[in-house]
Image (cartoon, rainbow, N blue to C red):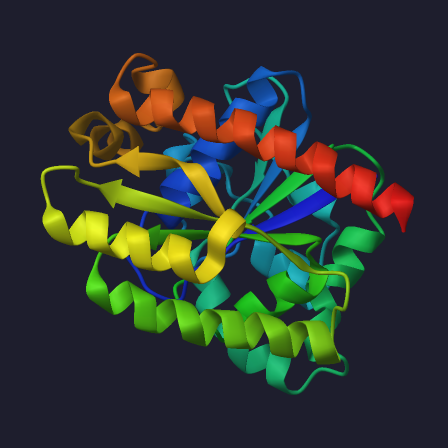
Length: 263
């Protein structure tokens, strides 16, 4: 059965797409079959995985409005076992079209529930908003991974996001859980970074991953080459951090599985 994890933060520029792409790459590297669902009209995850516009024949937009199945939209990447359902700017119109659909919050869940067991994981890269696209992702997901930039305003956004997730749990998807919060763009030279980390860990405790993602130029360069940072430069600090984060994620997955069996 496919595990569905949404990478969500309504604030832009927090490393959300970088996290989605590199976590998916790390999972594929350890033998998992992974699908990235690019649910952001900017299409950055598609670009970062080397999918040029000419190859985006069927997209996540088509999946959402029901004009094609998810497996038809999936495009193989250069990374073994990793595929992506790409996005184009057409997806920006989906919010308007979804408004008039019955069960509009469940369109993605329906598409995912009808797909064959082709993948072990579906990683959803959400847009920087809490509109219908993100609500569709949260309604379809088993868990949420939240990248959080180490800056003051990020804390205000986090409280709003957590409130939204609780509403989704109450009204649309009772099984969704917070997989973890990952601190991104971490700069140990900055006192504010340490203060933000202390506040977040004090507020959320064990829900915050131990691994932090440092600021790293090589990670910023990777998308322009159509490659995840893990492929572009495996030895850079950012890539090494994502490998550690992947190991931590897998460990948490085992804990989720054990809790599910106990229940």
